[in-house]
Length: 319
Image 1 (cartoon, helix red, strand yellow):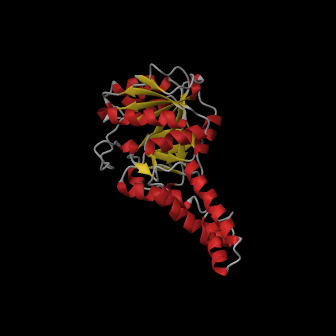
Image 2: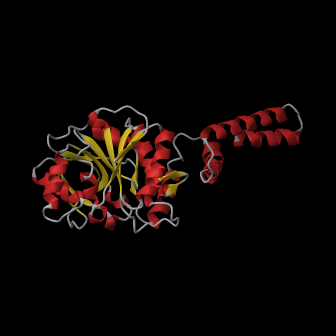
Image 3: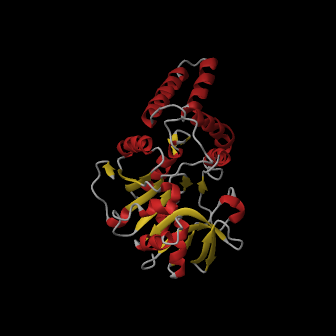
């Protein structure tokens, strides 16, 4: 275990465990020096997006569990810690191939209070974490954020299914035939999850869902319905492409845009944003470019010439 980052220790229930130990066989990166967690979606790696979403929800102390190509991922995490001013504790899970439950359990010595669990390959609305924390966490139990919009779930066949009954989860598993929600991979847990996982391990069951099933048996597993909030599990090339389309669609803001913004400005800005995302350009540089473009437009307006005025108008739209 190692710690990177300079932030002081946070409140004990402010820790976020991110599972990033798996190989990701269904979505293999084409680069040898890259893990699935480092695959980029418009300039930001998957695990970077998970960290930033949690940070936006007010969380800044992370435990990242690594396994497959751990040295490569740790190097990436060191950079993220500095860039985003967050504390990241690295935990190695030598048993990662057995199942993701072993990755959660690998953190048991570092967790003394309530904590969150996230998947490194899930995109989600930060407000899910904010609202999840407002729910009453059962003593010796856990809460799972669930999605009841089953018809909108991408790749439902691969999703972990959930049977919710009046806010309590009564069944969980990938092969459930009767279910009314899916698991979003976002949890708020008490340390009881570790004892539940130990129990599952004794029966040679090693997934996180196996541990959650033990908490269900204690009637301590609650559900938080995310409603229409955005989330997505990126597990295949198809889901990666879908994620890119989904993120762009959230930029539309149709209800807030006027006619020109909706049909002229926004389509152009979206295309420019996509192109810029493939280059290491900071927001500050983009701000400077926009400012300089605005100054050029102002200068051209002073010329009074029709051609310069037309070109200046285009520059104003661009800036």
